[in-house]
Image (cartoon, rainbow, N blue to C red; front, side, top):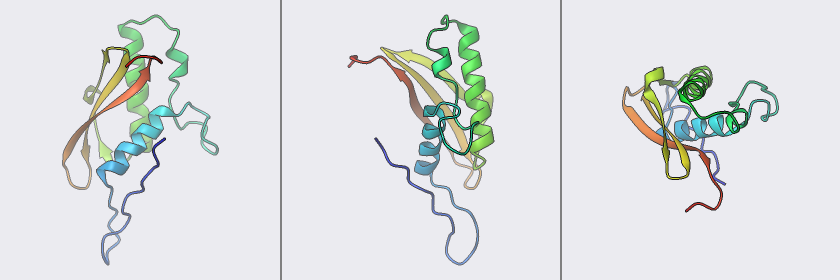
Length: 124
């Protein structure tokens, strides 16, 4: 299990908030990997990924999952900017992968990373 690294909160003598890209990526990974109600103290943190395991795999289910991921990132990660179209999902062998493209609100640098949402045990 990976640990969470916290961003550098202040730079030098000023009170400007600094967010590192690694910390942002880990925050989003934690947000997406938690089930709603799993984190003590905030019942809305996380997504309902387990709810979709046994649903019929179709375009509507994919859109619902993308909407939920987008809404939670907007609510819990104010340091980044993204639009719904910046989240894409695809199946790579036995993994469900989400690509997330976002812009850092402080540096205005656009970054992209892939996040494995689900992996079938025993594959690879």
